[in-house]
Image 1 (cartoon, rainbow, N blue to C red):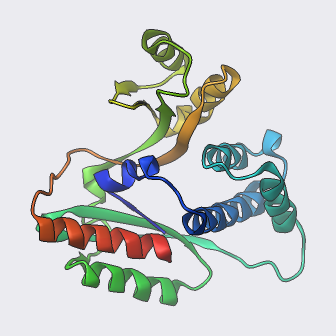
Image 2: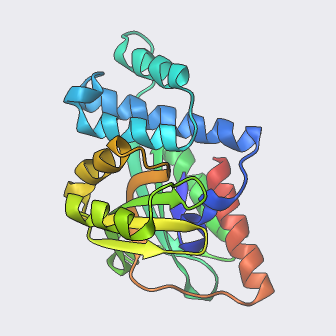
Length: 230
């Protein structure tokens, strides 16, 4: 599962250990399974699968693991059927959180989400209680150190391909797109050999809540860590 907040959006900058990588690969494998079920196993004829494969590569998922996940999802038999679910709620100091998950057991996942919010001094809300505070966007994060392209050239490449915004941070570039333009922009950057740390359609908050209280920070980190562990 994943929760959307400023912390979650910059979490890719943290060093990933083997255990964390394993959880990420498991989650990506589930996303691949759903995409294959919906549109078939050929990425060239399934844009959703193509985008998820790119997302997997951005997370350093090995090619043979990606191929095995696609073949497994395309096979018949005892394949697990996952479905996409969304939860909304509040963290400390009114922080708005959206949780997106792929699950084979909605009751179990709902209980785990509720537990994660409760342990972080938050609460699960009703559908729509915070989603109006977010916009669905394509988001591509690029590591400055690994990118050979000049900032202005990268910005023009992204904008010419259809990106809606380009932001420069201390150690990364962020490219934002409308959901329908994401695939074209991502493929343009990929063809230009731009190294992507993150590439996905996600929920971007319209405003940020800055947490400075140490207890609030511990609580929201606890909630997000519990969500990531599931």
